[in-house]
Length: 409
Image 1 (spheres, rainbow, N blue to C red):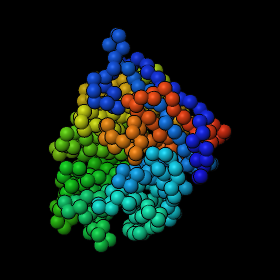
Image 2 (spheres, helix red, strand yellow):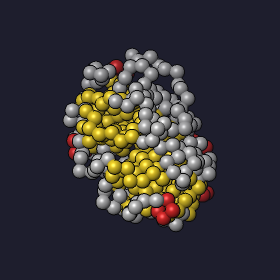
Image 3 (cartoon, helix red, strand yellow):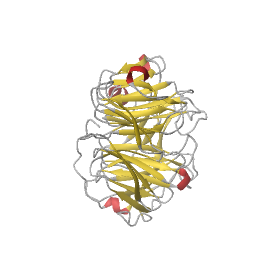
Image 4 (cartoon, rainbow, N blue to C red):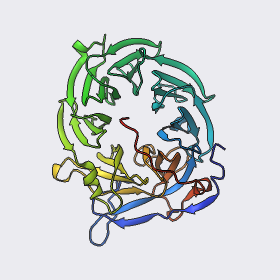
């Protein structure tokens, strides 16, 4: 079934290991960390629960999204399609086709519509799909020759859809598909991220290849003269941003040259700037060189943030970030190894620090990458911590030449 085949057939066993590594606590649990006799923290090597081959060939997995309410895992691929799986079993459910350009972002974020997933693409559209029948149900289009790199739902009334395109931030009222604003003076290059602040839904953050992070107030009739609140300059092309902190007042920022910065977006101050993040992370484990960063993960209960770094051979590490220039990146506290054979593009954590994905307890999360694999990782909290399996369909797959990472986004 879609390359999944004998996924229930065990062909390769991956043992859960533990190795000494100095550091703090594990992202898997907020309890006191396990320590070796010498006081160093045990770095958890998480077991691979199962793995799905989304395609045979040279197709990438770009992004993973999930909706717990309908127990569905969505995956965007380099074939410009979305495919859907059961997060509990890995069963293939169906696919959505319609984009004729690279899909840059997907999300189950339409208010009060858990069965609807949205996607944006280089074809200049933001599309909504009904996952019950895999049909397109709406389409928003930007201007001529405009690409869509990112989108987000928000606003004080929850009625706004913001999207980032070529040097523009576009806003629609998604309820009637009416465009309400086109902000084209704040950025000079492609807008790679738009996000509404979780606890201040009227505040919109945009980030772009020009290195700027802009904060807009989206209440009322939106225009840049009156609604651009502040601008922060990361000084290099921005890949991803995300909110964190107990009031979500902080913003982490990853760039296309793999640097990390931390900001207080309310006052525009930069609190941390780590230009040699890859070297610092590499020094914090005994595995291969950290070549790139996939994302950051924030745990609200612990008020801690981890930088997720990867190797060209597909190993991932969770490195804690501390607001201390002398020790900004700590030793890897979780390692995901043995699932991928190439660059990992996306990491989707199971809901919450202690939450589950779908009906299957003990799942840490899912990853996808340039090897076309979708891997499910088991938390080390579950009882059967000595066995995990990989689909036999992956064992016979020929190893592909590792490709350079897609840039800039």
